[in-house]
Structures are given as structure tokens and as C-alpha cells.
Length: 253
Image (cartoon, rainbow, N blue to C red; front, side):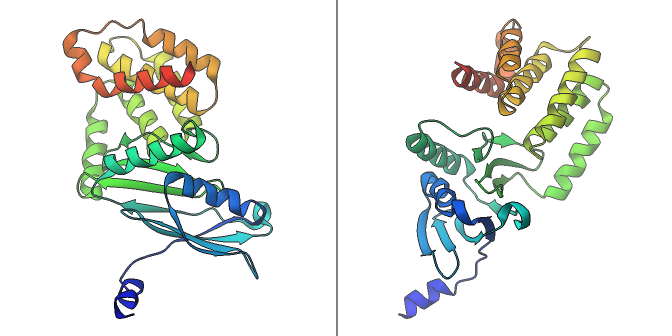
């Protein structure tokens, strides 16, 4: 009993998210598909449940009867020391359960992305709540300040636009703003852009179209990026983008 009480009372934070009362069990299904375990379930007098997973934590959910009118979408950031292993495990669990990774719409599970301050995966559940799981690269304030200074010092308008589009897509999940930014950059500033940067920009554009469900545009962008010839050294420098391009090919075909 003492051991059980110690575990129950250890210092921790449990976020409580609102979700649709009528889709409560469907909502929980997404979390169990990722590998979370049900730690509490209540159907009456009100809908409430908790799920937990070692290495990530515990989340609770409250069913709101008029969710579309009154539901408040929430979110939280979970800090972990091993984001790659957690990402691969959650991804494998989702693929095993659904047969594919839900990468667009709601719910969705993002790829592992690097921002100025961390490596992260963004998870949006069926109610629209967003959980960011990330591994820090250092003090976020210092890193963001350095990144802002780096971007401000860039002479290339194209590279500045690419950086902004990347931030819209992977830090804010504002895919429309990311699409518009990269499209404008490719139209106005493409002259004197290195092969490496152009390749990365076209891969980013392809992925944004995929995330927006614009398959025709994604296929067109994919064909364009495959026409870019890279040297061996350039391929080594854009290895991550090449890997992502292969994932996009598989997703589109």
C-alpha cells in the first residue's frame, strides 16, 4: 500500500483535454492505437478517462456533450530524452493498427522534425488537441534568438522564405501559410539558388501539398524535385530531405 501511494503521489502533471462526448470511445481508440494503456474509464455520470504510457506520461479526457459549440481545444508539450525511439515506436504502433500513418486531417501524426530549439513530433488527436513530444537542443530562448539573428543576416531572400515556410509547417502546423510562402519564393526568388536549397525547398513543398490533401500538386512537385541533379557531396548534405522524399513517394504511390 505504501508503495502504491508513493507512486500515486509522485510529482507529475496530468493534462485534462476536452473531447466530443459522442465520439469519446473513438477518441480513446487513437491513443490506444499509439500504444497508450487505459488507466481509468468512466461512462456515467459523465464521460471521463485516462491513458498513460511509460516514457511519455498520462493524459485525461472529459466528454463534452456540446463539443462543437463549447469544446475548447487544448495542447501540451512533453519533454523526453529519447525522441527518436519514442517516435519510431508510436509510428510503428499506428501503422500496425490502422495500416498507415494518419499524416493529414484529424487525427494526425507528424514526421519527426527539427526546429531551431528541438526535435519534435506533433500529434493532433480526433478532438483537435495537440500534443508535442520533443527533445531539446538547448535553452530555447537562446537558440531562438540565435536563429532569428541567423535568418536576419541571410542575404538570400529565397533562403529567408524557405526558413519561414519550414517554421510555419513544422513549428506552427500552419500549412496554408507554409504553402503560400514557399510558392511565392519559388516564383519570385529562384534565381541563384543552390541545388541543395532548391532540392530541400521542393521536398518541403511536396510534403506541404500532401499534408493539405492536394495530391495533384504534390505529384507535380515530386516530378520537379526528381529532375534536380545533385552531386555526391550535395546528396550527403541533404540526406534527411532525400529520406523524406522517399517517404513521400511511398505515400503518394
